[in-house]
Image (tube, rainbow, N blue to C red; front, side, top):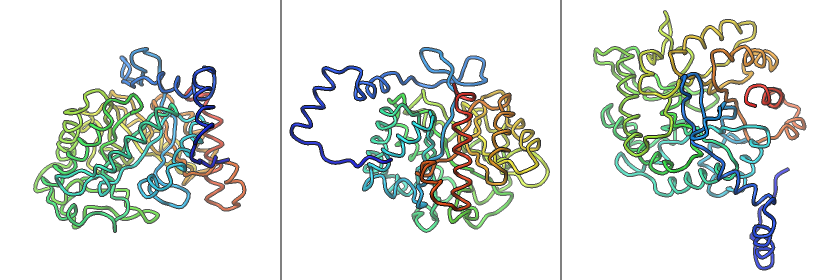
Length: 376
């Protein structure tokens, strides 16, 4: 159940003050303790997983993509006017057992031009980081989204490769500078599913899925270059931009499963050729029914001497039970797992009686069942 947030005045403020002063075990005190207990996340010394720093305790990413709400709206569409909803959703994700929330930031919301960042959006991002600190959740901040093609700025689409990369670097400098001091940042994900085309490409965005453009090209013309070389240079450029202002938080990039160097379809982001500047490898995997072994083999291809996080997964093409089995069997190769949460609790999903609601409900039940096993 969501709590209605109302202004707190007069005697209520005095009551809250009294609770903070005289009741150190109250929920307010617990919230403060949660914030203070957050530690920065680092790659473990054996480079197979993650640890909390400085304690050295193991950390297993287990959480949700919060890419849109139940109405399909991206977070920037409501995080100012409906902030209590964001607070409620973060509380629900925490209560479901998540420790990581992946948030997708749109380039058009954070850049006013190729050289000017959006101060208001950065301030709201800082507010989100503070919320993550209070709720004890770590953020996977994925950037440079152009999910709504119609809202992508015309000036951004008009840029050439060099100028576009420079604008993307400014985006990341602004975001990383805003978040550098917070322990609640798990990682910066440079872009969701970037791709290098095989030749010349007319558009910067790939075809839409469910109305949103999740795939984006980092160049429109190879100009005689090798695809992995372009991908590596792009990763190095944006990682360097982040490192100029934040040398500590982890950096990755969300890769499609067809990034592997195999015959046929490939994204150009071959893991062993682009992972050098990255702290860990992130891959998006949606197992198909009856092809679980194939998905596990694909996952193994992303093991290149750094931790691997399955950054997207969902029973889209398989049953919830098959996804559960895949997650369990993926443990030798993966170090973290992130599914989806779209602003609806299991209770509300049970009332809908629709196929999408049933799929999501099945996933949330698997998530709760595996939580003690995968990320104790």
